[in-house]
Image 1 (cartoon, rainbow, N blue to C red):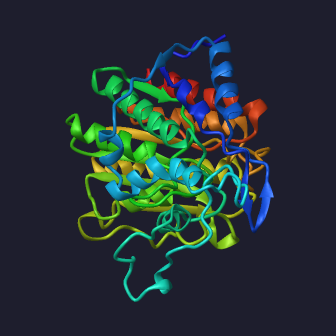
Image 2 (tube, rainbow, N blue to C red):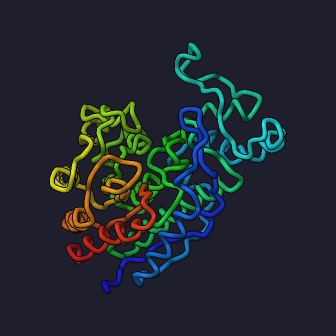
Amino acid sequence: MTVLRMPVVWTDRHRGHAPEGGYWMGVRLAGDEEPERGDVLRDQLLGAGATIVSAPDLGPDPVLAVHDAAFVDCLRRAHAEWVAAGHLSEPGQPHVVPYIFATPGFSARARPSRPPASIRAEIGLYATDTMTLISDGTYRAACAAVHASVHAADLVADGLPAAYAAVRPPGHHAGPAYFGGSCYFNNAAASAQHLRARGFASVAIVDIDAHQGNGTQEIFWSRGDVLYASVHVDPAAGWYPHFVGYADEIGEGDGLGATLNLPLPPGTGDHEWLAAIEQLLRAAQQHGSEALVVSLGVDAAADDPESPLRVTAGGFRAAGALLGTLGLPTVFVQEGGYDLPRLGSLVLEVLHGFEERHG
């Protein structure tokens, strides 16, 4: 058995986020981003000999480094205010779910000038869908995921070649002031921002999740010091996040040219996917990146229920090897991956491939 050398940063606080499904196209469905997902991943990593490191509580600062303060505060108090308003009995909904959204067409202004009086409406200032519910422990779990990702960045900044944050809920669909797509706070963005604060002049975020990280893209859209580069299923084929993730999105202002999107058609397998990753890594080299954050989704796997891509276990190992060729201090942050029996093994394919090449 090949033993994983890099530490796995973990927090038990993820279990507080238990949304018990979500609403998709108005229908209540069972969820696939539940506590079992994190525990299955941890057990599979321990079975492979991984060393688990507990994440410390770092307070609100790492979250506020990449998110709007009013947004963070709303998520902090959302469930308590939902309960206080009596919504556990009327309408009988235990989780916070928006019913009205402050879309651009709702007001002559881009965003209303004052928050609504009720939490059931206020949450619609920040939510992008009805799938991403808020349970009693969601805020604490989302903060803990950020803390684990930032602690992994600290381990790398302190001299380790790599560290892996095995976190949930995932983060790359969470933007500066919005949540959605099963994401609340942006773990990879917080990790990259912390690496910048620790002295790395430029950082690359390479996102290999099957879906484009719209939140990460927006956080760094106008910044040139952090490259966001993603390979994902083409949103033009009807896949999340639908509205963004196109090849002509390249950033603006100081960030012009520091965003790279490589959308792929449904059915894409190893060869084309790996060629796209090679292109992302060339962009990281041209950017002059001094450190790397990998948004490690493994939902591009052929048997994953959330993606039409067809990447094999061998493809994931080859991707890890390609990432290792950069030779950069690297933080891996868990994103998607919903084939639970294979989740840990696919993650390990990437990490082992990386360590074989990175040394």
